[in-house]
Image (cartoon, rainbow over the protein chains, first blue to last red):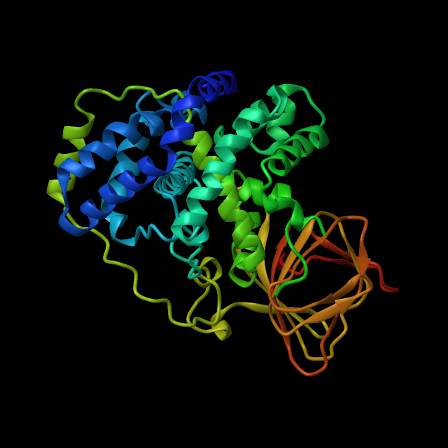
Length: 209
Length: 214
């Protein structure tokens, strides 16, 4: 999927997501806990209905279909299976449900791409992008506040920044690859992402030491 | 708290999962020591998740859920809740690359005060290894033909550009020349990720690549 699609969704869903945010996140968290505690297949099916089509979109935007028509559906299966198996390690105090699911999708995509490229991985994506490593609990309120801030902030961004954000964060492209594709200097791509993060009042710029 | 960090755009690529394995191991090890970067990563992942949720959904095949449930019924294992992590000597991303004891690694000594060991070469040709400097030992002046990333694991060292302790993420570009010296009281152990051979600039002028077998 192209960045333009993402952007059109961003604007059309604006009103709805702005009001539903925390309630929806709470519901997904409840469903994940039901899967973890009771292997609740009804809860799992509800999660599947919402997230499977998003995982497929993510697989397509990452270009997986260019390496095999069946791969986007295969990624959906791998990610949903991992969600089922890892549900006990989901902790709502540490991460919003969609953030936890995104990190699983990202890690599964990394492992799938490595298998496809016959690259012998001495270290799995889960060992590097460790889902359980952080012992500090940021707290549910802080987590949903970050997501709300990002959601609100994204709508305020100029088109060029939103487009670069969608490409850099979802499309499995490095800054350099995005720069090549958009025929922009590398520095421009990097600074658009930094400006966007700054406008969303995220603290990333504190790292500019 | 660590004083030297990855660049923001390197953290962005880590969050998106687009950096090569060498870089991602180095950043993962740094994150272990750096709550500030972990907080930044958490925000970047939240940002990714918002973009992820706002994609235009693409329908999956009708049988997808039933197929998945069959797979689950055949093999219904779920992973147990993670046990609290014991205080391991090394962060997980690195620990998975190491044998039970560092003595089991194939250590080479390319010069006085420095021992190096090769752990793996990643898909982009980056070499991941360990560097060990003797307490108080100075490594001769050298520059790098490609980018080198070091993350201090134990002890500390200093060079012309600063001094570094556990968790510090140090990037050296081809234009930097330096001669690191380990802190006096303790040996210094580092994770090293290098793109290309290191060249000595000392009087001998010989080419040094600590990872290539002679």
